[in-house]
Image (tube, rainbow, N blue to C red):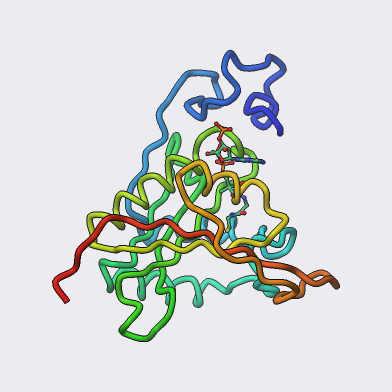
Amino acid sequence: MQDLGTALGRAEPLRDPRRARVNPRGAYVDPIIRPARIADLPSIQRIYNREILEGVATWDIEPWTDAERLAWFEEHASDPTLPVLVAEMEREVIGFAYLSLYREKVGYRYTRETSVYVDPRFHRHGIGRTLLTTQVEAARRLGMHTLMALIEASNEASIGLHAALGFEGIAHKREVGRKFGRWLDSVEMELLLPLNPPD
Ligand SMILES: CC(C)(COP(=O)(O)OP(=O)(O)OC[C@H]1O[C@@H](n2cnc3c(N)ncnc32)[C@H](O)[C@@H]1OP(=O)(O)O)[C@@H](O)C(=O)NCCC(=O)NCCS
């Protein structure tokens, strides 16, 4: 883990490197979690496309074009049950999270898939936890019952984050993905929210 002071080019270690509430001048600042806006799309693109090119958290291979990202945003903006959240610190978007449909069929209407991405400069400072906690709360308010996370099996950070919020591992699928010339396993983690729907 890189501490935030190092990430921001500071010589001095921070007083509490696990806290995200630090700006480049070393002051403690709470990140703002808010709904995404169109103006956030370049930051979302930067964070996600880096992961496409360098990581296996997403199994996309080609970076998204700006047109694809705009279409994605408009799809989410048109459906209140598919919220996109961003974490903003000092007017910089440093992470995002969103809900998407788990499956298209109507029977899956109380289930959503969660996704969360944090700029690597700010990993392990509580941003992912804050984003996902807010996302889970949003899902609860939206009347969702089941949240699913589909995670590459060696992604200890994501598995740890979801486990910390109460998600349970329910499936391990072997060699269902391929990227960078190797097979990838996926794990599915699930969180059930209390809900008794009318139908
Ligand atoms: C997964 C990810 C979102 C975590 O975000 P983060 O801001 O770094 O995580 P947090 O600092 O909020 O950590 C919250 C908890 O998650 C767990 N966790 C986070 N990083 C971890 C790691 N590298 N190893 C093990 N557990 C980890 C810990 O339980 C942690 O709590 P703690 O710090 O009190 O021990 C981030 O690593 C990331 O963006 N990775 C690349 C994209 C990705 O994998 N997205 C998920 C796709 S399924």
